[in-house]
Image 1 (tube, helix red, strand yellow):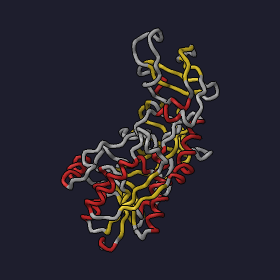
Image 2 (cartoon, rainbow, N blue to C red):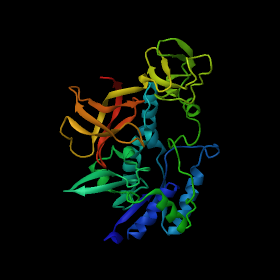
Image 3 (cartoon, rainbow, N blue to C red):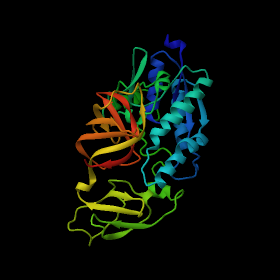
Image 4 (cartoon, one colour):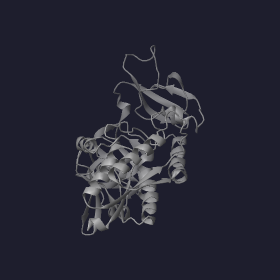
Amino acid sequence: MNSKSKVIVGLSGGVDSSVAAYLLLKQGYKVEALFMKNWDEDDEDEYCSASEDLADAQQVADVLGIKLHTVNFSHEYWEDVFEHFLAEHKKGRTPNPDVLCNQRIKFKAFLDYAKDLGATKIATGHYARISVENGRYFLRAGIDGNKDQSYFLHLLNQEQLSQSLFPLGEIDKNEVRDIAKNNHFVTADKKDSTGICFIGERPFSEFLTTFLPKEKGDIVDQDGSFIKHHNGLPFYTIGQRKGLEIGGGHGKSQEPWFVADKLTESNQIVAVQGDHHLLYHDSLVADDIHWIDDEPEMPMRCSAKIRYRQASQDCTVSVGEDQTIKVFFADSQRAITPGQSVVFYDGDRCLGGSVIKSRHNE
């Protein structure tokens, strides 16, 4: 039956998508590949890897004997992801563009494009799984707990899941590397990409200054005493240590300094030393809730992650009168960050998620 099904796999030029394409062929699917360019990089830019990634994707496609299509989604990415990213930073929040990229680009623009090419499904190299029960589709964590990427996929809906495949969901990263080496993929030993796709390996603040002005303000301690000037709220995030550059002469110890809060009205950053109590909160309020299946009964006991690769944390979720989500954690959480996603789980099943609006101590 698979041999009659045409699947287009998003081939990024990395090892994960390379092996995803290989596994689909082994499973009997008719496979083609698509290389997506989502950012108008300058190929002369020292941080740009688009041309190298395309060459690597083509080598893998050639080894597998599959057709490689190319498409430029830069316009869609700018309008649907990047403008939101900038707007959130201007508000002093820290957005997660990879979450929105999956919803709007990889599982919308790519999906539509693939269907125009005659595909019945798309596939990616994400470490996650899809299960079907009574005609409903569920997103589950990947078997490899160190690589599980269900956090980034929590905005997908029933239609998107029903037309998607995650071939890597049942295997771990070491096996993926082994498969790539055995098939002589140029991507076999390629380093995994880190950070946000359109920034690459360049310093984050350096990138943001291209689009956002530096509005200097004060960094103060928990008592409001001045420490130094900062370069602008968008260039810092809650819990950040690196880049504060608070030297000797400040504080009562040699412990490092961390961003504990960003005060948008006064354009101030509150910094604290060490594992300070101001870094911890036991509850949060979130909005823009999305459930993958029907909305669960409230209040609900489940687990949640406030960042990728965090261990799931026990919590209780309720809905406020204003339809915001209120999350109460069993244990206080460090560096809850407005703009990031809080993602809910029932065991290994991802229920959905919401955007963190504020954090509190009850």
